[in-house]
Structure formats: C-alpha cells, structure tokens
Image (tube, rainbow, N blue to C red; front, side):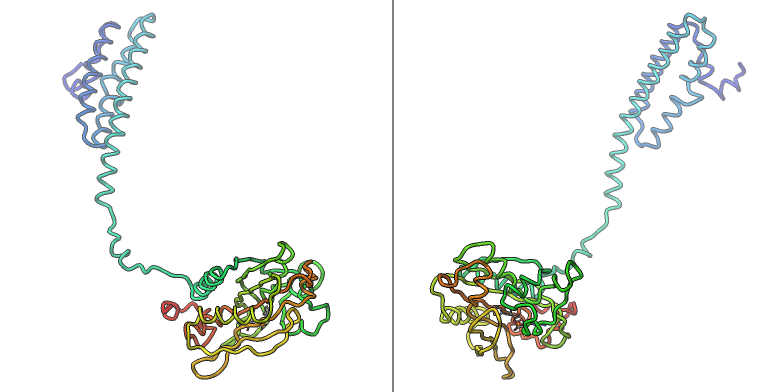
Length: 354
Ligand code: FA5
C-alpha cells in the first residue's frame, strides 16, 4: 500500500487483523479511544464528527469489519459478533453523551432566547365583573343576609310556567302585556323565552313545601324596542316568601329594608297600586331620580290564591308575597347611568368607571 493511499485511508491501513484475537485487541483499543473521544466532545456538533470518525465508512472499525472477509469461514461469526459488540458499546456511549450535551445546549438556548415579557405584563390591566353582574351579586348578598336562598330556573320555559300557573288563563288579555318571543318547539306557542323571572316562583313552589324564602335573579326576554329604559334582553330578580300569616305589612317592610340597604338613605320611593294576575293586591315600585322623575323598578304583591293552588299549596294555610325588580334599572339608579343601552355597548371607557 502506497504512503499516499495510507494517508487517505489511515484506518484501512491499520485494519489488517491477522486473527480473531488480534481483531479483538484492536477493537478493545478502539473502544478505549472512543471513550476518551466521546468524553472530550463539548458540543453535539463535535460529537457528530467524532461519531463519523469512530463509526463512519472510513473508520478503523469499518475497516476491521471489512477485513473479516479475509478470515477463514469458522472465525467469521465470532469476528462479526466482536465488531457488533464494539459498535453497540460505542453507540451507547455516544447516545448518553448526546443527551447530556443536548440538555446543556437547550438550557443555554433558553437563556439566550428568553423573551423579556415584563414590558407587556406591565401594560396589562386586570378586568372586573360587568356592572350588571356586580349588581346581581350585591342583590343576592343582600337577600341572603335577610334569610333568603338563591333559586334558578330555565331561560326557555313552558307557557304553563310563564303564564298559566301564574293565573293567566289561555287567551287572558294580560298576556298581551308581554311581547313574548316564542320558540319553535312542540305545539305552537307552548315554549318561549321567559318574559319574566316569575316562572321560577312556580318551579320553586312545585318542588319544595312551604315555608319558602327565595330570590331568583336571571335574564328575561321581550319583543321590546331598545330605548333608554328598555332592552329586549334584560334582568330581573324575583323574590318569593311563603309562610303562615304573611301580610302586606311584611311585603312593605321587606321592600323598605331592601331599598335602604341597596340605595342608602335619601332616596324617595313609592308603591303605586297596579295589576298582575298572579298577585292580589298588586303594586308597582318606583324610585325618584335626581331630576325629580320617577322610574319604575318592579312589581310586587301578595301571591294570588289561584297561583298557590296551581302549585299544590293550600291558600287557607299559607300566604305569601312576591316581587320582581329590574336588575338593569336598579344598576342605572345606583350607579347614575342615564341610558340602559350604555350597559350593553361594551365601551371600555364607560365600563371601566364601575
Ligand atoms: C313583571 O315582570 C312581573 N313579573 C313582576 C312581578 C313579580 C310582579 C312578582 C308581582 C310579583 P313588569 O313587566 O312590570 O313585571 O317588569 C318588572 C320590572 O322589570 C320593570 O319594572 C322593569 O324594572 C323591568 N323591565 C321590564 N321590561 C324591561 C325591559 N324591556 N328592559 C329593562 N327592564 C325591564
């Protein structure tokens, strides 16, 4: 073999194994040298080069493997096994070192590429609940403090719960007071978006025996045109108290206690006689705005005996009162909002004030 050729393929030149023992001895040296070379590699790139040198096509090991062809047939399997074992050992060393180096490089990369988010975080503003949610929670807290529990009911309800059980028989003219949005489900006009929270009175009375003291806040829907005091979707909070010997004085006292707690002193309010099929007598509750005008906040009254009966409660034994206030209007007065539509526009300059 010429010197030139030897330089070009140095390992090939060393790879003349004369016997299986000689081959094994050379493989042992290769593994020892590989152990040192692998430990010396300080990057995954350097390790890849070392790998090519140790296991590549022009490596000493590859040359030894091709030298097996010159061994006699009986020795070849043992020589092949020895080569495979050396290859496996070197590969295992390589893999372990690669994992170490990759971990170090990844940690270093994370350090150098770390984004400075402090600027962005400094600019984040923390959100808060919408003014209607705040109002609803305040109302719940207030009534829970007075011994009520909070009840819930579906926003889509049956005609029976929304009207019939509340003493509006079919065809009753009072149904026209509510511009109802019906849902295309079952028999025509049998299912609707509830027009008020009063069906929760029915659901409560049909599911638990008296005495009862619940409030039920929630969304209501009517075909009302949006203006400064109306929205087609709005919120009410229903109240229902059923016990023995409840009279109008309890209702008036409850409303008085509630308004003082909610608005503070100094607000003028009035109860005016009104009509609802499900209460008798009935009243409407108004509050005076700073400009002297009156705003209707809700209705109330003594629960009609027909409603108690429809819900399976004996009106001879039990009496009660109910009320239903507009949460959006309560929020308007409490926070001095002139136009209900402002609550729905999602203008952050407006909403941030509350
Ligand atoms: C009722 O809905 C009765 N269920 C209230 C009631 C309950 C009476 C229990 C007796 C016993 P009314 O339709 O008046 O009543 O509505 C009550 C309140 O809901 C109104 O005073 C008002 O504050 C609010 N409200 C009604 N319609 C709208 C609307 N389109 N937008 C905003 N608030 C409304």
